[in-house]
Length: 383
Image 1 (spheres, helix red, strand yellow):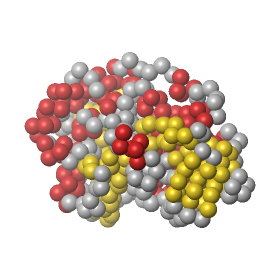
Image 2 (image 1 turned 45 degrees about the horizontal axis):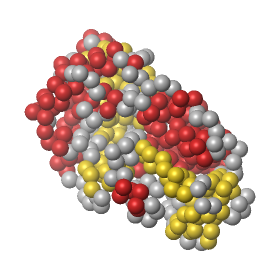
Image 3 (image 1 turned 90 degrees about the vertical axis):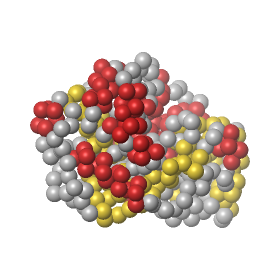
Image 4 (image 1 turned 60 degrees about the vertical axis):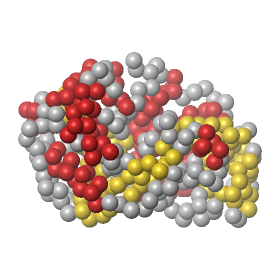
């Protein structure tokens, strides 16, 4: 392969770009990935590494999450990516939250999940706070360490024949060609995965689709000296994850608005995942702006830690790292748009990149190559 000869060129080396590289490789294509950064430093490495299925919005997002989870499970041992946790404990602090979980478990997306009453929850996770109303246990999730997984995935793809052009800012994309700082890359098919860059390429599409940016707070906590049986979520997550929509959700929302209005205003919901060294990644919050500020107010972090303590009953361990993540956000969970002949603009606009990217990439390649839709895209959506 030369710089001017590849079948598929991908702009962006985050998880979405790498997923398209994998999909192209599996179709037998010669693939080149070009990125302005020397290494991944954006949203793809600033997250939980939590491949979440349960609670994803019914329809395409849920189907994509299931497929992407399967790709992660297949790919991880090949690429030397460790899976640190499996499953999910969605914990209920309030009876209204348990009502929502009961409705979810009874529906088609609750298949394979089980409800735990307080006794069952104590048996599975005796370290958690007393007084929890119960939980939903899902077996469907996987958790990797993004800081490690993304570089390992890129190295795996490179060893398999994908070419990477790093530290090359793309200036223009047109049918069959990408103009970048060092020259021109020519390709039969082009996929643009710009991440949070809303102004360099196709700004008119971003404006038309109402895309803005979301800033979130993340914390790493020292090892608490115990091991949780699965990643944790709580009541606040039930009103953020669209898959939990049900007839009794409004009652939970009303109680949260009365009891935790500041948490809701900051877009906080608890996710706590654990690394092999015992440390915890805890978050997160959501603030929206076309140009998010770089600051991390302590009050927001304190509210996240307050929710962690309320759920676990543990005093939050020492915070060893703090950082923010930024990702594109819009009215859709993701979109793909044909912006020119042989060129597709692909964005995840909901913070679900790790959970859905591999499936989205398979759909994009099927479209570009005029192949039948992948099986997961043909599944009937749950009612």
